[in-house]
Image 1 (cartoon, helix red, strand yellow):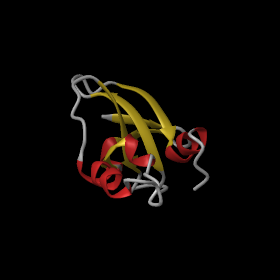
Image 2 (cartoon, one colour; image 1 turned 90 degrees about the horizontal axis):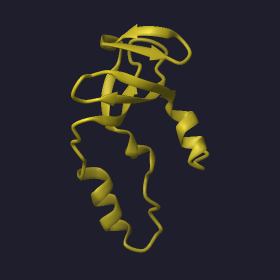
Image 3 (cartoon, rainbow, N blue to C red; image 1 turned 60 degrees about the horizontal axis):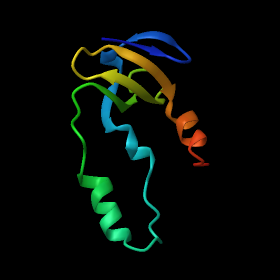
Length: 95
């Protein structure tokens, strides 16, 4: 599988490590009411969709960047690759 890195161009997926659902960018607020339940859901509950899915990938064999890859889990076709920092900033996260 080829991942089109936004900064480095086409790379083989063997340079990357899959790290799970891209919703992991949205950490719960530890000070919020019911924070324990929110962190349990965040840490342990995941969807396993057949079809389009946003995933976190880490470029371990390269520039060590984090990517959000939108991929069809049935066909493995990649439709979008974004830097995770840009996705987080677009969602209002500064860190």
